Image 1 (spheres, rainbow, N blue to C red):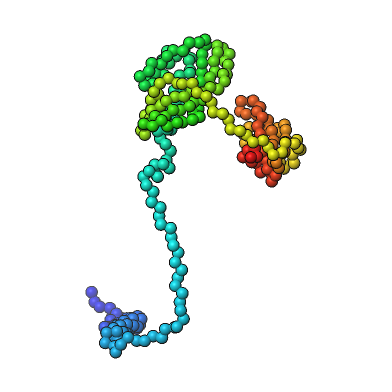
Image 2 (cartoon, helix red, strand yellow):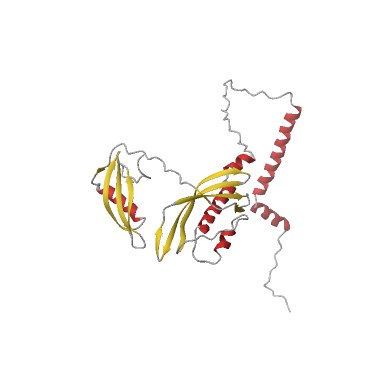
Length: 283
């Protein structure tokens, strides 16, 4: 193949390319100069600190600077193991209360079940569960501990109040009674009843101080009625105010409300002079 007579070849010297590259990046030179200047400055400073005639004197202001106020922080409290355990609920007494309530509910329930003696006897320590005599059935409606007396050596005397329902077909709600049960417990929650329940007396109710002023019937303001009805609606439906009295600047409002079973129950609300619902009667 013959060469094209029009083709031309140009040669560019390498020195020209290098010069062009240097012109396109002039900042390299500035960086180099800055680096050299930094090294020189560092050398001069080091010489001044090492071989100078003495420390440079810097004028200091004569103004007195008050020290920063110090705040005394309280030292962290250190509690003993006994303090920490005392702050926790008493596991033994709580377990004793549970066992006493459970035992009373089983002991005074007679519903014809064949395993009643086994259920009652399971909580007794070496004492046979007796078979009571009577007609019909006896159900414990509720049982609650009202007093716990530590006897020492992991033993507790628990007074339990309870109510029974008895009869045949139609039940009679009997008066509330009380018995005392002696329970042995341990910190792991194990409990046992030492013997049959003993007769006990219910605690006397505390004396309620009379109101400073006798109650007077009043007509409630519209905003107080709205507050009372709204509060009663949180419990049931169709609230109706049936009575309102005032004593010591507080109003007692009796409201009938229907519950989910369809029964209407009278409930009471105490309202303060500012229209707020109070926690209870005036003290």
